[in-house]
Image 1: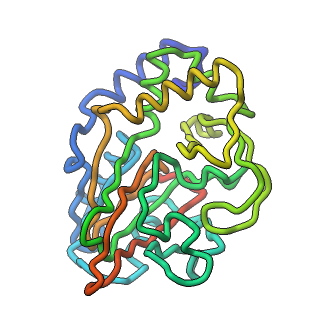
Image 2: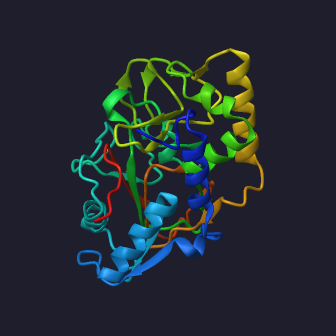
Image 3: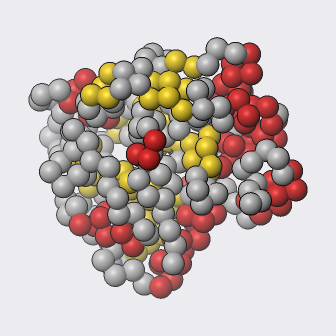
Length: 292
């Protein structure tokens, strides 16, 4: 089967590359789709979100609800676009969604999502193995912070394209089955797990590109050969550069990101001690989004 993400077919890659970059969004505002009722999307609203998911693996929806703690909203959006197999975790709520807010109780403060600290480039669930890869995600904002908390977003297909254009050897190195190892320990949500070994880039059974990555420097082991070191150095350069395909977005109350687990960061933030804390619901799925 011809697949542009395999290195053996340059023609398929060139055709896909041209289509990918044609009319690609150039600002975060272009990702936003206003929806009147999250439980009954209008055909035009659904089509707009589907087009963005197809083009750049992400879309930002904006509801009219504003501050509303109803978890059914992100669930409804997720299910409408084929996200059903929820990845629960130790620190998730009873319904499997995670309430991402600054915590001062229990073990949560030791896990960075539950602090107000910045989070570097990553794809969610990079420590998951095998069939439990996180392919789809919804991040829904109930309450934003008084200051900060913005997200940087970067389509993983774009970073693949940029690396391959520089040198296809970078892609070959990052597709190796043993290139990235997360040693045994606790995952980002406090769950005990064994070692997680696998590639950065992989192609699933439907021919879709998946990325597994974290920019963390501790508790990670990279393959030590020159090709891997060169690929990682180039990837880091692209992530730190003024990338024209990078989006910076601020999720306000009632807004949410639905995506195919694209690369993302979070800025540090400050809550107003006299106001409700920043609160986002995170739902992670073993499914990739689908558009009817």
